[in-house]
Amino acid sequence: MLTTVDTPPLDPLLHRPDFPILSREVRSGVPLVYLDNAASTQHPRQVIQSMVACYEEHYANVHRGIHQLAQESDDLYNAAREKVCRFINAPTVEQCIFTYGTTSGINVVARSWGDANIEPGDEILLTEMEHHSNLVPWQQLAERRGAVLRHIPLTDDGRLRMESLDSLLTPRTKLVALMSVSNVLGTINPVDEIVRRAHAVGALVLVDGAQSVPHQKTDVQAMDADFLVFSGHKMLGPSGVGVLYGKRELLDAMPPFLGGGSMIRRVMLDTFEPGELPSKFEAGTPPIVSAIGLGAAIDYLDRIGLEAVGQHERLLTERAHKVLGEVEGVHILGPEPQHKAGIVSFTLDRIHSHDVAEVLDRSGIAVRAGHHCAMPLHKRYGVSATARASFYLYNTLEEVDRLGPALEAAKRVFHRKRK
Amino acid sequence: MARDEEELYQEHILDHYEDPYHRGHPTHCTHAHQDDNPLCGDVVRMELQIDDRGTLREVFFDGDGCCISQAAASMIVEKFDGRAIEDVKKFTANEMLELFGARLTPNRQKCCLLPWRVLQSAIYSPVEGTGSDASDAGKACR
Ligand SMILES: Cc1ncc(COP(=O)(O)O)c(C=O)c1O
Image 1 (tube, rainbow over the protein chains, first blue to last red):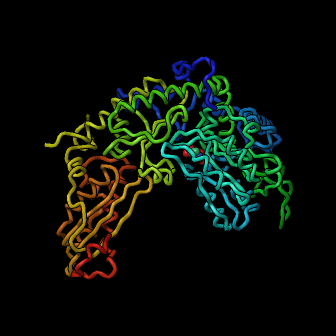
Image 2: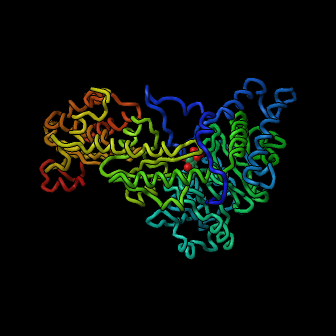
Image 3: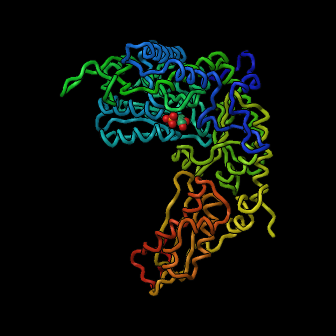
């Protein structure tokens, strides 16, 4: 997970020219400092160009054409799936299902596996730090099936209370669904250990990899997760595409969720036979060009190497802690840098995070403010909202440094001398 | 920094934010309503005392949130303190944005309009079991 070994350091200045948007000014004379990567990342030319090339030269619907363009689009779409498969070290390509994003992947599992396997009284174990997309689908499933939801509590510094697993994991636990990295706290969760302990009581594990797959090497076989979901738009790819990986025997046994074209083998007027994996879970026209763009994003990340990316983000996070620590009134949520990914959420005394974001925007700094789709987490720490700076391979230490003066400027606006 | 309506954090807005008009609770409360903007976590509560003639004898607000939502609450409370509920009903969302003064992006217009929305609902939300002369009606609001 955390890499300290001798990967050559990443130089963001080498990669920034690949990202056209990074050279724009937010307003005249104000360059963009994009620190909202946990929400969505920007796109290198190579990704944009792969999609333009598809539209301009190859585009047709996939899976159903005999003509040349259909064949070419098919090949590109399948090649993207192969890249995904290699990227997460899935045993076979059919286990990598294209979805519309993390949210849609979790909902497929909740509806398909969940409805078929969860019985009244069964327990689903989540954590208090989950994104709404890994809470609500399980709340809906629990409601439909009469299951019970449990949550791994958090320490004050934003880590999972692992000792609670002794009582929370029981033979009634059928599924553990958790994020590998928190989109607010940045915490890197001990997924391997949780998978091992969940399996020991016979529970399956779904890993929400939205914030880890883009930043650290993922090996689904080593991790032994039963399901892994992630989104293309947080890893240099376009929005509208994501991936659901599942263990073969689970996916084979699961009923299809969405019904329609492509997901069938044969359809009669009153019944149907489902198709093979992965089509079984890809009803309708899939996000063809977005998937191809995701494939190009994976090529780009592979070329740089995720070890280097993770190491660079560690530097940025350490610097952010230092810079923010020097601003009086700033409180960082979550653990020390060695336990976290490139995500730093904070509050500033007596200034609401929306106002913080608004003033940072004047310096061209894009951060997110609010509850970041984790309302229960914010409630746990007694705050209604936080500001969040989150990094990726193209961010520089100088950009992180700019947070300091920009926050001092916010304080000058709000903590003015009274007349 | 930009001037006038381009400037979001202008003096009179910060004044309302830091030193709000009628943040707290009325001595008697006949009507109350609370709502939030879940997106940003802004909360505004309005507590009113409306008399038999439909006059807002007292208007107070309480809440938590960004500068825009809380300053806007203070402004609308100041404007309608002592006025007729008919005036509140006629007061449009656009007029609220004008009252606020600074130009707002659509996302932040929601912050500004939260107190307006809450006041519009509060005049239709009598507090149960409190006539206008109930002695501990103020408590019943909370
Ligand atoms: C941890 C986590 N899970 C799930 C999601 C939802 O992803 P998407 O909106 O792409 O479905 C996000 C992104 O906001 C996230 O950070």
